[in-house]
Length: 104
Length: 104
Image 1 (spheres, rainbow over the protein chains, first blue to last red):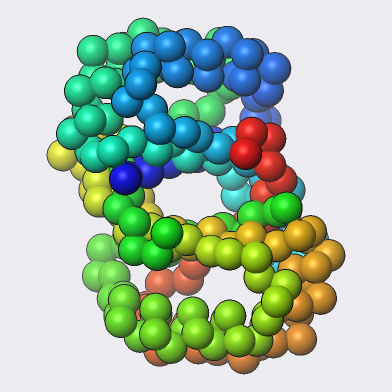
Image 2 (spheres, chains in turn brown, cyan; image 1 turned 180 degrees about the vertical axis):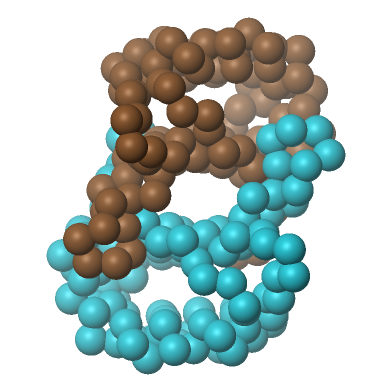
């Protein structure tokens, strides 16, 4: 199982419509990738590591897929549509990465 | 349950001793925070979101605690010792944040 992590930077002037994100964007994503998506979590940044500092990321999404290939096959055909939805709920560009489990 | 995420940037010239990290550092961390730690995962960056790009983070650690307060009480007294161990396995400074669950 691989993880696709999508991190939304907690920039000054950040706009992020959590309601739209959860109800519309995540529903769109889940529908498009279908059964290849094995689960996901959404976390909201609360604080940074240093006392009194703000979280580096406002939202962190972790998506689970069987493999990088399964993700590419499921997401690729819908990537343009899903990415085009992002400006509807935020003004920041997410940081994205694919990771392999070391301790799970 | 809150998540403490520790992200090691995949910088040029990065050094990261995964063996030391898993066997020594994570053992030290787990021993010091004790039962307050409800679980953790370690993921290794494989790729970035754009085709052919490298992962923004080499390693992502997610630690689970009952609350931010439980984390502070368990980690605080040992923070200096645990942070002082970091240069023994890497030459980068991790990005750290505490997050609250939105979808879990």
